[in-house]
Image (cartoon, rainbow, N blue to C red; front, side, top):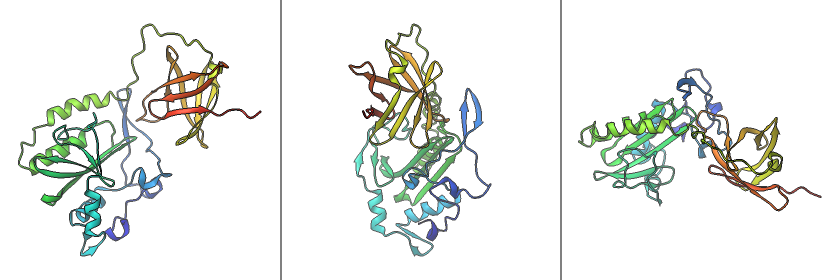
Length: 296
């Protein structure tokens, strides 16, 4: 679809960024703005992310608003665009769903897009956030209007603030109506990745770190190995041995932290078997990993 739309600077993998005219990803680390490495999700391609520019995205928006046509050519069938926009699943409103999205607008999933109802209009949207990047594309089909906001900073409500201002202005509402709430929520967003405060009196881990060492497996993520690291532990996941730290927190609960500006420590607990070794571990982010039994 990129080729017939003339989206020459767009792709689905990081290697598509072939020139130096690109934005650097940024994140607030320890209160300071820093350049960070972009997320590399090339293995899952378009199922995870895309690379593009504002001008290229404008072509995509025009095609979708024109029911699949662009520049006098049919890129997608009109019924295909209608199917993409159709509501397939109801979703609950999450903390990161900022105004004008609310319990009164509802929130739904379509085929690769989201949607909600706002003052009598069906809004089509697609947002995303990766390391140092936060974006949103918003369409109002019955107004033949749309906007895309690309921010090279994660954990910022800037795209949603611009989106809300644009929608309200377009639909005849005070553009400033929700800005104060969005700015207040922006402060909370920045706290999402902050580590939890240290417990005043952390409880002890009654087992041994050695009892946790071993290879564990998850049907979706594959294998992760927990290894001794001096007087602590470390984790290596997948064939690339993607690293994480693992530190005891309190009462047998550990914190697992992978590298990256958008990673938060994940609470990790272990189930100990009759032999005194961990049978499995569970994290809030990745689910349950079961120990791979040694062959005798």
